[in-house]
Amino acid sequence: MKINRVFITGIGLVSPHGNDPDLVFNNIYQGRSAIKMTRSGTPEFGSNILLARTEFDPSGMISKQHQIFMDRVSQMGVVAAQKALERAGLLSEGTDLSSTGVYTGCALGGAQTMQDAYKRYFNNIRTARPTTVPLIMPNAPAGHISMRHKLRGPSQNYSIACSSSSTAIGEAFRAIRDGYQERIVAGGTEAMLNDGTICSWEGMPVLAKEHSEGAHASCRPFSKDRTGLVLGEGAAMLILESEKLVNRRDIQPIAEIVGYGSSNDAYNLTKPNAEGQVQAMHTALNDAGINASEVGYINAHATGTGAGDKVEIDAIKSLFSDHAQHIAISSTKSMHGHLLGAAGALEFAITAMALMTKKIPPTAHLNKRDPDCNLDCVPCIGRPAPELKYALCNSFAFGGSNAVLIARII
Image 1 (cartoon, one colour):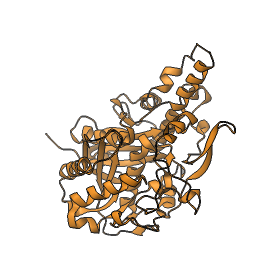
Image 2: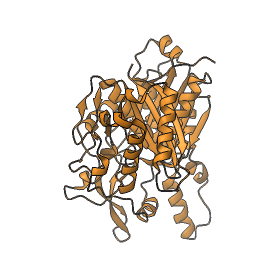
Image 3: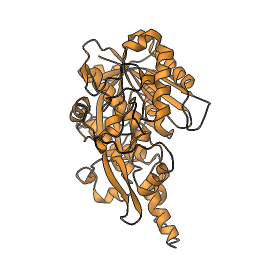
Image 4: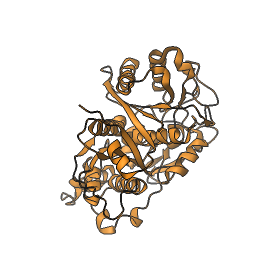
Protein backbone atom coordinates (compact mmCIF):
# COMPACT_ATOMS: atom_id res chain seq x y z
CA MET A 1 0.00 0.00 0.00
CA LYS A 2 1.33 3.43 -0.93
CA ILE A 3 1.81 5.79 2.00
CA ASN A 4 0.75 9.35 1.22
CA ARG A 5 2.34 12.36 2.89
CA VAL A 6 -0.14 14.61 4.70
CA PHE A 7 0.18 18.38 4.98
CA ILE A 8 -1.55 21.15 6.89
CA THR A 9 -2.49 23.81 4.34
CA GLY A 10 -4.86 26.05 6.31
CA ILE A 11 -5.74 26.94 9.90
CA GLY A 12 -8.93 28.61 11.09
CA LEU A 13 -9.49 29.73 14.69
CA VAL A 14 -12.18 31.06 16.96
CA SER A 15 -10.23 31.36 20.19
CA PRO A 16 -9.93 33.27 23.47
CA HIS A 17 -7.05 35.20 21.87
CA GLY A 18 -9.00 36.06 18.71
CA ASN A 19 -9.54 34.63 15.25
CA ASP A 20 -6.41 35.50 13.25
CA PRO A 21 -3.91 32.60 13.57
CA ASP A 22 -0.87 34.85 13.20
CA LEU A 23 -2.06 37.27 15.90
CA VAL A 24 -3.15 34.42 18.15
CA PHE A 25 0.25 32.76 17.89
CA ASN A 26 2.04 36.07 18.49
CA ASN A 27 -0.02 36.73 21.64
CA ILE A 28 0.73 33.25 22.94
CA TYR A 29 4.42 33.53 22.04
CA GLN A 30 4.52 36.78 24.02
CA GLY A 31 2.98 35.04 27.03
CA ARG A 32 -0.27 37.02 27.03
CA SER A 33 -3.14 35.43 28.91
CA ALA A 34 -6.81 35.55 27.86
CA ILE A 35 -8.04 34.29 31.24
CA LYS A 36 -10.38 36.54 33.24
CA MET A 37 -12.57 36.37 36.32
CA THR A 38 -16.16 36.12 35.09
CA ARG A 39 -19.59 35.97 36.67
CA SER A 40 -21.46 32.77 35.83
CA GLY A 41 -25.18 32.52 36.42
CA THR A 42 -27.26 35.36 37.85
CA PRO A 43 -26.36 37.93 40.52
CA GLU A 44 -28.50 35.99 43.00
CA PHE A 45 -27.71 32.46 41.85
CA GLY A 46 -24.25 32.04 40.46
CA SER A 47 -20.55 32.30 41.16
CA ASN A 48 -17.39 34.12 40.15
CA ILE A 49 -15.14 31.81 38.15
CA LEU A 50 -11.97 31.98 36.10
CA LEU A 51 -12.71 31.45 32.42
CA ALA A 52 -11.12 31.92 29.01
CA ARG A 53 -14.17 33.06 27.07
CA THR A 54 -14.14 33.75 23.35
CA GLU A 55 -15.51 37.02 22.02
CA PHE A 56 -17.58 35.71 19.18
CA ASP A 57 -20.14 37.23 16.87
CA PRO A 58 -21.15 34.98 13.97
CA SER A 59 -23.39 37.53 12.29
CA GLY A 60 -20.84 38.48 9.64
CA MET A 61 -20.51 34.87 8.44
CA ILE A 62 -23.71 33.07 9.42
CA SER A 63 -27.15 34.45 8.57
CA LYS A 64 -29.73 34.85 11.34
CA GLN A 65 -31.86 32.24 9.60
CA HIS A 66 -29.06 29.66 9.85
CA GLN A 67 -28.10 30.67 13.39
CA ILE A 68 -31.50 29.43 14.56
CA PHE A 69 -30.43 25.89 13.71
CA MET A 70 -26.97 26.12 15.31
CA ASP A 71 -25.92 26.05 18.94
CA ARG A 72 -22.91 28.23 19.79
CA VAL A 73 -20.67 25.16 19.45
CA SER A 74 -21.72 24.69 15.81
CA GLN A 75 -21.45 28.38 15.01
CA MET A 76 -17.86 28.43 16.27
CA GLY A 77 -16.99 25.30 14.32
CA VAL A 78 -18.53 26.61 11.08
CA VAL A 79 -16.68 29.94 11.31
CA ALA A 80 -13.34 28.26 12.11
CA ALA A 81 -13.79 25.84 9.19
CA GLN A 82 -14.61 28.65 6.77
CA LYS A 83 -11.55 30.61 7.88
CA ALA A 84 -9.37 27.51 7.43
CA LEU A 85 -10.72 26.89 3.93
CA GLU A 86 -10.14 30.54 3.04
CA ARG A 87 -6.55 30.50 4.29
CA ALA A 88 -5.91 27.31 2.33
CA GLY A 89 -7.15 29.03 -0.82
CA LEU A 90 -9.99 26.58 -1.31
CA LEU A 91 -13.00 28.89 -1.55
CA SER A 92 -12.20 30.38 -4.93
CA GLU A 93 -14.74 29.89 -7.68
CA GLY A 94 -14.47 26.58 -9.47
CA THR A 95 -12.74 24.65 -6.67
CA ASP A 96 -14.29 21.19 -6.36
CA LEU A 97 -14.68 20.31 -2.68
CA SER A 98 -17.30 17.60 -3.16
CA SER A 99 -15.07 14.70 -2.04
CA THR A 100 -13.68 16.54 1.01
CA GLY A 101 -14.30 14.95 4.41
CA VAL A 102 -15.00 16.53 7.79
CA TYR A 103 -13.55 15.04 11.00
CA THR A 104 -14.41 16.96 14.16
CA GLY A 105 -13.90 16.55 17.88
CA CYS A 106 -16.66 17.77 20.18
CA ALA A 107 -16.99 16.37 23.68
CA LEU A 108 -20.40 17.60 24.79
CA GLY A 109 -22.30 19.14 21.89
CA GLY A 110 -24.93 21.87 22.27
CA ALA A 111 -24.49 22.60 25.97
CA GLN A 112 -26.45 25.87 25.95
CA THR A 113 -29.34 24.26 24.07
CA MET A 114 -29.36 21.40 26.55
CA GLN A 115 -29.50 23.81 29.48
CA ASP A 116 -32.31 25.80 27.87
CA ALA A 117 -34.31 22.59 27.28
CA TYR A 118 -34.01 21.55 30.91
CA LYS A 119 -35.01 25.03 32.05
CA ARG A 120 -38.20 24.76 30.03
CA TYR A 121 -38.91 21.30 31.39
CA PHE A 122 -38.43 22.23 35.04
CA ASN A 123 -40.56 25.32 34.50
CA ASN A 124 -43.39 22.94 33.54
CA ILE A 125 -43.16 23.61 29.81
CA ARG A 126 -43.57 20.10 28.49
CA THR A 127 -43.11 20.87 24.78
CA ALA A 128 -39.51 21.22 23.63
CA ARG A 129 -38.52 23.40 20.71
CA PRO A 130 -38.46 21.32 17.50
CA THR A 131 -34.80 22.19 16.90
CA THR A 132 -33.62 20.94 20.32
CA VAL A 133 -32.32 17.50 19.34
CA PRO A 134 -30.38 18.58 16.21
CA LEU A 135 -28.86 21.51 18.12
CA ILE A 136 -27.62 19.28 20.95
CA MET A 137 -25.99 16.56 18.79
CA PRO A 138 -22.18 16.47 19.17
CA ASN A 139 -21.88 15.77 15.44
CA ALA A 140 -23.94 18.83 14.50
CA PRO A 141 -20.86 21.02 13.86
CA ALA A 142 -19.52 18.44 11.38
CA GLY A 143 -22.89 18.29 9.67
CA HIS A 144 -23.18 22.06 9.36
CA ILE A 145 -19.64 22.38 7.97
CA SER A 146 -20.41 19.68 5.39
CA MET A 147 -23.70 21.27 4.34
CA ARG A 148 -22.32 24.80 4.16
CA HIS A 149 -19.57 23.86 1.69
CA LYS A 150 -21.18 20.80 0.03
CA LEU A 151 -18.49 18.48 1.39
CA ARG A 152 -19.71 14.98 0.61
CA GLY A 153 -16.78 12.99 1.94
CA PRO A 154 -17.02 11.15 5.28
CA SER A 155 -18.39 13.25 8.14
CA GLN A 156 -17.16 12.00 11.52
CA ASN A 157 -17.27 13.30 15.09
CA TYR A 158 -15.20 12.00 17.97
CA SER A 159 -16.48 12.59 21.51
CA ILE A 160 -13.59 11.51 23.73
CA ALA A 161 -13.44 14.26 26.36
CA CYS A 162 -10.17 16.23 26.13
CA SER A 163 -8.74 13.97 23.39
CA SER A 164 -11.67 14.52 21.01
CA SER A 165 -10.12 16.86 18.47
CA SER A 166 -6.62 15.35 18.56
CA THR A 167 -8.22 12.01 17.77
CA ALA A 168 -10.21 13.62 14.94
CA ILE A 169 -7.02 15.05 13.43
CA GLY A 170 -5.15 11.78 13.93
CA GLU A 171 -7.84 9.70 12.26
CA ALA A 172 -8.09 12.22 9.41
CA PHE A 173 -4.31 11.97 8.99
CA ARG A 174 -4.59 8.19 8.76
CA ALA A 175 -7.43 8.37 6.22
CA ILE A 176 -5.33 10.53 3.88
CA ARG A 177 -2.06 8.72 4.51
CA ASP A 178 -3.66 5.35 3.74
CA GLY A 179 -5.33 6.57 0.56
CA TYR A 180 -8.98 6.73 1.62
CA GLN A 181 -9.24 10.53 1.33
CA GLU A 182 -7.25 13.35 -0.25
CA ARG A 183 -8.56 16.34 1.70
CA ILE A 184 -10.21 16.65 5.13
CA VAL A 185 -11.34 19.54 7.32
CA ALA A 186 -10.22 18.34 10.76
CA GLY A 187 -10.33 19.92 14.19
CA GLY A 188 -12.59 20.60 17.12
CA THR A 189 -15.11 22.92 18.70
CA GLU A 190 -16.43 23.30 22.24
CA ALA A 191 -18.77 25.79 23.89
CA MET A 192 -19.77 24.54 27.32
CA LEU A 193 -19.27 27.70 29.38
CA ASN A 194 -22.94 27.87 30.29
CA ASP A 195 -23.84 27.98 33.97
CA GLY A 196 -25.16 24.43 34.24
CA THR A 197 -21.96 22.90 32.89
CA ILE A 198 -19.79 25.24 34.93
CA CYS A 199 -21.68 24.24 38.05
CA SER A 200 -20.88 20.59 37.30
CA TRP A 201 -17.18 21.37 36.95
CA GLU A 202 -17.26 23.31 40.22
CA GLY A 203 -18.17 20.03 41.89
CA MET A 204 -14.74 18.63 41.01
CA PRO A 205 -11.61 19.77 42.88
CA VAL A 206 -9.73 20.61 39.67
CA LEU A 207 -10.53 24.28 38.95
CA ALA A 208 -7.91 26.97 39.57
CA LYS A 209 -8.18 29.61 42.25
CA GLU A 210 -7.42 33.25 41.49
CA HIS A 211 -3.72 33.99 41.88
CA SER A 212 -2.42 36.95 43.83
CA GLU A 213 -0.91 38.37 40.61
CA GLY A 214 -4.39 38.54 39.11
CA ALA A 215 -6.93 36.39 37.29
CA HIS A 216 -4.81 36.31 34.12
CA ALA A 217 -2.02 34.49 35.96
CA SER A 218 -4.16 31.82 37.60
CA CYS A 219 -3.49 28.86 35.29
CA ARG A 220 0.07 27.81 36.19
CA PRO A 221 1.08 24.44 34.71
CA PHE A 222 4.29 22.90 36.13
CA SER A 223 4.40 25.58 38.82
CA LYS A 224 4.86 24.81 42.49
CA ASP A 225 1.87 27.04 43.32
CA ARG A 226 -0.52 25.68 40.66
CA THR A 227 -4.10 25.18 41.84
CA GLY A 228 -5.93 23.74 38.85
CA LEU A 229 -7.24 24.26 35.35
CA VAL A 230 -9.23 27.09 33.76
CA LEU A 231 -12.10 26.27 31.41
CA GLY A 232 -12.07 27.81 27.93
CA GLU A 233 -14.09 27.68 24.71
CA GLY A 234 -13.53 28.02 21.00
CA ALA A 235 -12.84 26.14 17.79
CA ALA A 236 -9.81 25.25 15.69
CA MET A 237 -9.99 23.68 12.24
CA LEU A 238 -7.13 22.52 10.03
CA ILE A 239 -7.15 21.67 6.35
CA LEU A 240 -5.28 18.42 5.74
CA GLU A 241 -4.30 17.54 2.17
CA SER A 242 -2.36 14.81 0.44
CA GLU A 243 0.97 15.52 -1.23
CA LYS A 244 -0.73 15.00 -4.59
CA LEU A 245 -3.16 17.87 -3.98
CA VAL A 246 -0.46 20.12 -2.54
CA ASN A 247 1.69 19.59 -5.63
CA ARG A 248 -1.25 20.07 -7.96
CA ARG A 249 -2.18 23.37 -6.32
CA ASP A 250 1.49 24.44 -6.05
CA ILE A 251 1.12 25.79 -2.51
CA GLN A 252 3.41 26.08 0.50
CA PRO A 253 2.03 24.03 3.42
CA ILE A 254 2.28 25.10 7.06
CA ALA A 255 3.67 21.80 8.33
CA GLU A 256 3.56 18.07 7.67
CA ILE A 257 1.84 15.57 9.97
CA VAL A 258 4.01 12.48 10.32
CA GLY A 259 2.77 10.50 13.32
CA TYR A 260 -0.24 9.66 15.45
CA GLY A 261 -0.61 7.40 18.47
CA SER A 262 -3.46 6.59 20.81
CA SER A 263 -3.92 4.45 23.91
CA ASN A 264 -5.94 4.05 27.07
CA ASP A 265 -4.57 4.10 30.60
CA ALA A 266 -7.01 1.37 31.68
CA TYR A 267 -6.43 2.74 35.17
CA ASN A 268 -8.94 5.33 36.45
CA LEU A 269 -11.78 7.40 34.98
CA THR A 270 -10.32 10.76 36.06
CA LYS A 271 -6.78 10.13 37.32
CA PRO A 272 -3.99 9.98 34.69
CA ASN A 273 -1.42 7.23 34.45
CA ALA A 274 2.08 7.60 33.00
CA GLU A 275 2.17 4.12 31.47
CA GLY A 276 -0.73 4.81 29.12
CA GLN A 277 0.72 8.19 28.13
CA VAL A 278 4.09 6.60 27.37
CA GLN A 279 2.37 4.05 25.15
CA ALA A 280 0.59 6.74 23.12
CA MET A 281 3.76 8.80 22.64
CA HIS A 282 5.78 5.71 21.78
CA THR A 283 3.18 4.65 19.21
CA ALA A 284 3.27 8.12 17.63
CA LEU A 285 7.06 8.04 17.38
CA ASN A 286 6.96 4.60 15.75
CA ASP A 287 4.24 5.79 13.39
CA ALA A 288 6.42 8.76 12.39
CA GLY A 289 9.45 6.52 11.97
CA ILE A 290 11.68 8.82 14.01
CA ASN A 291 13.89 8.46 17.07
CA ALA A 292 12.88 10.05 20.36
CA SER A 293 16.05 12.16 20.16
CA GLU A 294 14.68 13.99 17.09
CA VAL A 295 11.80 15.64 19.00
CA GLY A 296 12.65 19.24 19.85
CA TYR A 297 9.37 20.53 21.27
CA ILE A 298 6.37 19.09 23.12
CA ASN A 299 3.13 21.03 23.47
CA ALA A 300 2.07 19.36 26.70
CA HIS A 301 -1.44 18.50 27.77
CA ALA A 302 -0.57 19.92 31.22
CA THR A 303 -3.69 21.61 32.57
CA GLY A 304 -2.32 22.98 35.83
CA THR A 305 -3.60 20.28 38.18
CA GLY A 306 -1.39 18.91 40.91
CA ALA A 307 -1.44 15.29 39.77
CA GLY A 308 -1.77 15.67 36.00
CA ASP A 309 1.28 17.82 35.31
CA LYS A 310 3.61 15.59 37.31
CA VAL A 311 2.33 12.40 35.67
CA GLU A 312 2.94 13.86 32.20
CA ILE A 313 6.48 14.91 33.12
CA ASP A 314 7.11 11.41 34.50
CA ALA A 315 5.84 9.92 31.23
CA ILE A 316 8.12 12.17 29.18
CA LYS A 317 11.11 11.24 31.34
CA SER A 318 10.28 7.55 31.04
CA LEU A 319 10.02 7.57 27.25
CA PHE A 320 12.69 10.10 26.28
CA SER A 321 15.21 9.16 28.96
CA ASP A 322 18.28 11.47 28.90
CA HIS A 323 16.94 13.38 25.88
CA ALA A 324 14.02 14.61 28.01
CA GLN A 325 16.37 17.23 29.47
CA HIS A 326 16.94 18.64 25.97
CA ILE A 327 13.31 18.98 24.87
CA ALA A 328 11.49 22.30 25.17
CA ILE A 329 8.11 21.59 26.81
CA SER A 330 5.33 24.13 27.26
CA SER A 331 1.67 24.26 28.16
CA THR A 332 -0.15 26.99 26.27
CA LYS A 333 -3.24 26.29 28.40
CA SER A 334 -1.58 28.72 30.81
CA MET A 335 -2.86 31.45 28.46
CA HIS A 336 -5.91 30.14 26.55
CA GLY A 337 -7.31 27.80 29.18
CA HIS A 338 -8.58 24.28 28.59
CA LEU A 339 -10.87 24.07 25.55
CA LEU A 340 -11.80 20.49 26.45
CA GLY A 341 -12.92 18.75 23.22
CA ALA A 342 -11.33 21.52 21.13
CA ALA A 343 -8.11 21.71 23.17
CA GLY A 344 -6.05 19.33 21.07
CA ALA A 345 -6.94 21.07 17.81
CA LEU A 346 -6.02 24.53 19.10
CA GLU A 347 -2.79 23.27 20.64
CA PHE A 348 -1.83 21.33 17.51
CA ALA A 349 -2.50 24.44 15.42
CA ILE A 350 -0.17 26.35 17.76
CA THR A 351 2.38 23.54 17.45
CA ALA A 352 2.23 23.70 13.64
CA MET A 353 2.78 27.46 13.76
CA ALA A 354 5.69 26.97 16.15
CA LEU A 355 7.29 24.75 13.51
CA MET A 356 6.52 27.20 10.70
CA THR A 357 7.93 30.21 12.59
CA LYS A 358 10.66 28.28 14.45
CA LYS A 359 9.46 29.88 17.67
CA ILE A 360 8.52 27.94 20.79
CA PRO A 361 5.72 29.40 22.94
CA PRO A 362 6.20 29.56 26.69
CA THR A 363 4.47 28.21 29.76
CA ALA A 364 3.21 31.52 31.15
CA HIS A 365 3.50 32.43 34.85
CA LEU A 366 6.07 29.70 35.55
CA ASN A 367 7.97 31.67 38.18
CA LYS A 368 8.38 28.85 40.71
CA ARG A 369 8.92 25.49 39.05
CA ASP A 370 7.66 22.41 40.85
CA PRO A 371 10.75 20.27 41.69
CA ASP A 372 8.78 17.27 40.40
CA CYS A 373 8.49 19.00 37.00
CA ASN A 374 12.20 19.56 36.55
CA LEU A 375 12.42 19.63 32.76
CA ASP A 376 12.79 22.59 30.39
CA CYS A 377 9.21 23.89 30.60
CA VAL A 378 10.01 27.18 28.78
CA PRO A 379 9.16 29.51 31.67
CA CYS A 380 7.33 32.79 30.99
CA ILE A 381 9.05 33.83 27.75
CA GLY A 382 8.95 32.21 24.30
CA ARG A 383 12.19 31.51 22.49
CA PRO A 384 13.53 31.20 18.95
CA ALA A 385 14.22 27.62 17.87
CA PRO A 386 16.20 27.72 14.61
CA GLU A 387 17.06 24.00 14.81
CA LEU A 388 13.51 22.81 15.50
CA LYS A 389 12.41 20.03 13.16
CA TYR A 390 9.90 17.75 14.92
CA ALA A 391 7.25 18.67 17.48
CA LEU A 392 4.87 16.50 19.46
CA CYS A 393 1.45 17.47 20.85
CA ASN A 394 -0.18 15.59 23.75
CA SER A 395 -3.87 15.23 24.62
CA PHE A 396 -4.79 13.12 27.65
CA ALA A 397 -8.47 12.78 28.58
CA PHE A 398 -10.79 11.68 31.34
CA GLY A 399 -11.60 8.06 30.69
CA GLY A 400 -7.89 7.42 30.22
CA SER A 401 -7.99 8.15 26.48
CA ASN A 402 -4.71 9.46 25.09
CA ALA A 403 -3.95 10.94 21.66
CA VAL A 404 -0.57 12.16 20.45
CA LEU A 405 0.26 13.94 17.18
CA ILE A 406 3.67 14.60 15.64
CA ALA A 407 4.42 17.20 12.98
CA ARG A 408 7.55 18.38 11.26
CA ILE A 409 8.73 21.50 9.54
CA ILE A 410 8.50 21.65 5.76
